[in-house]
Length: 176
Image (cartoon, rainbow, N blue to C red; front, side, top):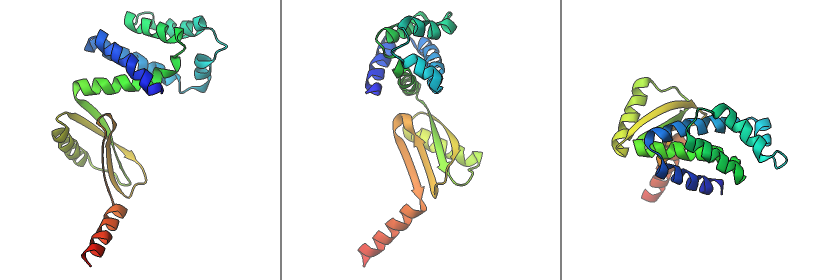
């Protein structure tokens, strides 16, 4: 439910701001979203016992020189009791900006370390396929093959030893 509400706010932001403003707002929203990782701050921001004015003071004090549209957005979210969607809004705005710029970030999961050359070859292949710039980072994870994820566009490619072994067995059984 949070994601749907966040999408509406982000859509309104995209319609009312230029790209530079959106980048600035995205940076502030990402910083605010990090606040929600601290359970104490999150509890204060979401608590019905803390007044809206105190929440606004806490959030707006460091943002004095921020974009007026961002300040109005934070005030609106506080007024409507929707400060809890800030992390979802930050993710959604980041994804929408990536789609606008055609610049995506992804991760490669594998048990072994890939060289920079191997990563760049995968990036080039994905960039050609998606007609966009793709940057990949390696994430160590116990995975019995290689898995590439680019969440923004919903791309997931995987090659696992177990999956290939199962498919090979199935093909042999079908041939018999």
